[in-house]
Image (cartoon, rainbow, N blue to C red; front, side):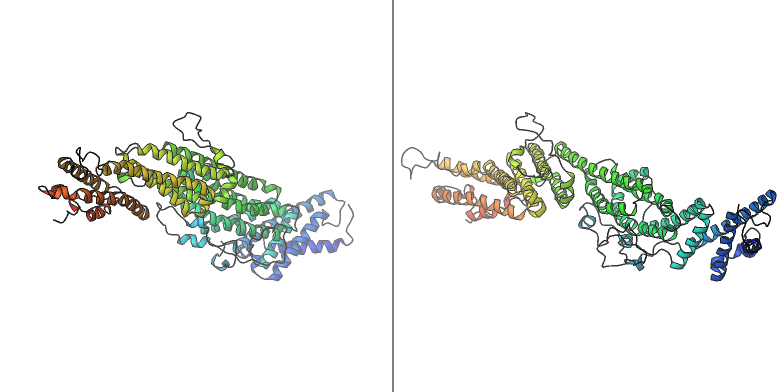
Length: 626
């Protein structure tokens, strides 16, 4: 080993450095235990760092003795330097921890608000729109999560800032960063890399935990999440989406920036090692929530929140890949991509299972009055919401639905021929198939009505509702298409015609001339007994129709009015004509009021009672004026 040029100078430098190191040995001095070097004055901190540098130089020279040839002395000197280095490193570790803890706290969210940021705009339509059945909840805590962070201009450019949605913030003041960097360089060069990383990771993880608590991110295992009721999970999903944006684009990105500032110039990949030590656990905790949802039991009500999660994660994926861009963070990127894939598969599975559930929906009790069935409302509200997620689902739904065929002979599955729907996307075909399946189920339910007229009214009401829901959603109407919409319109109009035939053909049959004339003169050969029976039959049938069909319900005002007008257009002229032809034959006999009970005006009024959904006594049919 080459001798130093001025051994005495080296000895003096080491001894001076050693005194400074020992003076701040917290195991030997009360003052050293109570004070922190970097909290005193700048000069003393610089002196201590210089002393550490001197000790490190002495260690590398492997001697502080004038007699470098004396082996025993060299061993003693080496041991002495090692001991001093250990004391210095223990002190620096304490200083490193103290600086980190002094400047580590949860993000001050209020001060970071930036309403101009497009990346943290108000919640999307899907985040705000809730099903009618779910009551509104207090979202005051969610306001905290709608963070919009000011872009922090920094002189330190970083290669990972590839997406404009990332917003870095300075987590520590520049002076603290400089001190941490100076300490880290000396600890790592002395072989204390592991200790440095462990201290850094433990303190910064604690700060991230505080930020997580502010953002409403709970420490729940996958099992804990899957045991929660879905209603409770819905609000947690909304909160998670907003919190995840903050975590990826701000919190984790800023942590990476801090690691780069402190460790980038120290050694290869050390900054990344510290970053992963800090954020890997919190990142896994964050993604475990989405993973638990992606593998949970499937049910129709979960689809839209799963799509919200999918959209949010898809939107975040470029930022995740940008922040976690190193080889050591592969697992984070892979986990995010796998969760995204499972969410997509869950959405496809739920849609398929929803179709099957509609087909098998077992309720057999007819809805009173032939009104809109709850299943119809549920399904149409559901697919209206599906259409709101059109862009996402068009990408996810790539295959046609599994349907029946008119040639299959399977009576338990409706027919649907794709040749008639050429050019439709797979998603559009699924939506049409859902409507086909719904109608098939409704046809089965209509058979449980004993009155054929009510069965037709039931089909009319429900198919009309389907048409109105399709017309009311531009997105849904575009996918369903006007051709299929016309087919649906024709179906409810046909049901209306079938209702009128079932109800009114027999009533109007009473107002025919056939059977009233005896052989001979047409004008004078009227059988009064037959005519009286005809009026009695008409009155009885009208009263029965009035009694029953006032309790039937057509919820849509326009449809109700249209059907009443259609009934009046057939009934009123026929009755007026019949009355005009035969009134004199009845009025010339005894008790004409027993046969001609109602005027034309009475019938016009009676028709207005129909389809209101509550009973009206036939006594309310105003009697003909005497």
